[in-house]
Length: 266
Image (tube, rainbow, N blue to C red; front, side, top):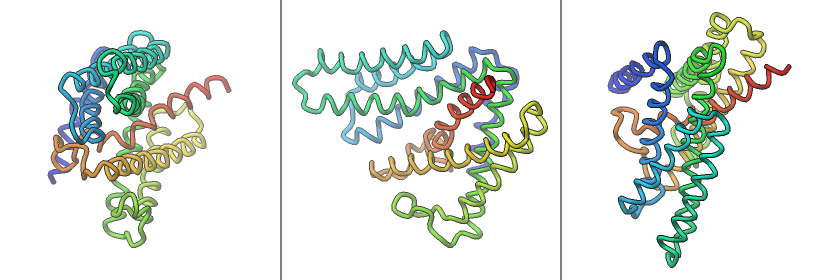
């Protein structure tokens, strides 16, 4: 019940932004998710802790990604990637040139920026496309159906471990349930609200998103296991942290954007 209550509270502002929100509200929402996700990520990968000013540098620099994507599209996003890499190495050069862990810190900074704000910024690209908000709904519904199908199939039918070394609780039966749920929901939603896309492509895209989403979930599980934490944080009762909710989404938004740009030229 706690899990569902938290999910409904999170869904309300997201639905409001997706249905009637102006473009700036999309940027604000992505910025909030990105900033919180980066704060959680640095807490996981820097277990000895970072000075407050390094934390501020890390989060604020990461916000350049959604700001750049919002203002200038793909050019702004890749400009933010260049600026962030240059900033990380320059800060190491001028602030802590004798710190033997400086390069490692900069590398972890860049990994987090690529993993969270770079990926999430593709949501803002989708907003500019025809029926962009419907495509975002498509991604969210496929992911939710995937998660719910995996959760309940694994709970009631799970017998065989999927990848015990990374995520001991996940099962093959749960994965299959998520696959079926995500494909059914994605195909049905696409058939009703995205009728211009052939149903065979909707089935294929739903299948790809579910598989990529499940791998993204395992990647976050691996990150937490290697960092020795159970959840990315505890700010969402019943769910853990923001990254625990974004894990399946981070890789699927770019996939949809690439797919839509590909079919435009077919």
